[in-house]
Length: 436
Ligand SMILES: *Cc1c(COP(=O)(O)O)cnc(C)c1O
Image (cartoon, rainbow, N blue to C red; front, side, top):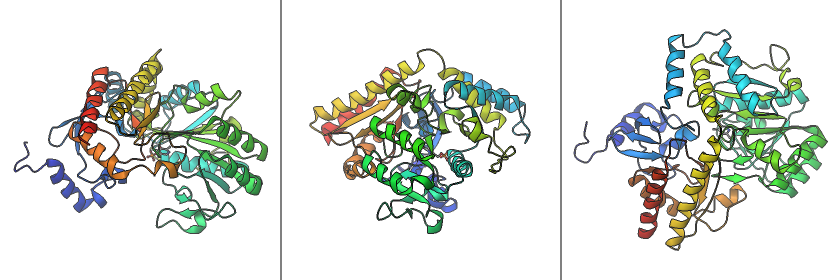
């Protein structure tokens, strides 16, 4: 149906949605609150593109916020999902495919001896936290400002007034006592890290970190910082928990930890939280670690954790087919080169117009900033010129390029993006910056 009177069907749908769904969306960042305007309602997607309710085509740099590493509708994945669906949607009893997926994940990530499958990154992060506390018998945890670990109560927290004090809830409905054990530190701040361990190290269950933080755009933990996180956790008996829900199987086949292992001899986290790519677009996530820790989970151990849809047969088929494709030789080399080409092209486009711009990428994950140097923490990220970012976002959207609708979110390139897609994106950016 063609839009009449210049009314976009996206507007029509958004108005209908707002009547029955809070804010018209089922996850807040989809609402375009940060950038303004009407969210695009996706009708269908194929490869590197999606089409909105008006039939307008976009080059998709969100890919469902990371899972669609092969692009939309990859034939091998589609076939696996269709076949699995014919055999049943959910059983509440174990299946061979869950074992296969657990084996496939463990095969690529040496720090993992066992994993448990769940249905969302939030659930995985929350369960990992409970397990870390149950395994150590300690309550306190460290997280970093700008890292997102899902919306479990204890993790919806921002820094308190000082290192001796614990965090404040960032959401209504989270009682202060629930975050009273969560210490929030600045990312990449070595001094604060040392001080926090000196004050609280003996009571810490874990330190949870996004090794390459994708929920404050794209910020890497520096090598000295990561090295110290590892050393201090070991010294004080706290578990180092890598939240690789976004970076896992996205930045490298061995995930972000394989990159740190190349830079820090013998490096590995104690526990890892995965999601997004391992489900290939289906609700699937996981957490895992060493056998001794994982065997503290029910039914073997005292830490309770469960899920009706955990290890869902259709989701595991989707995840397995995705892992099979991304394990093929050369996959990450090609993906990484294409992503670098995008970031370099955008940077040149901005610089040609005298605009400050910088970016970074790893594998198929990238970030860019309308500033001269890469920020190292959340406060720096948030110094981005908001109106300028929003103008860029909308300029690109009008030109059929869909970037994240918020300046603190990462972007994603899939194996379906071609050099021609990258070139078209860079040309659109060039045109925008020439106008701006
Ligand atoms: C997306 C994300 C989560 C939450 O996963 P959901 O599946 O949205 O619950 C947790 N941690 C990180 C690093 C993420 O990027």
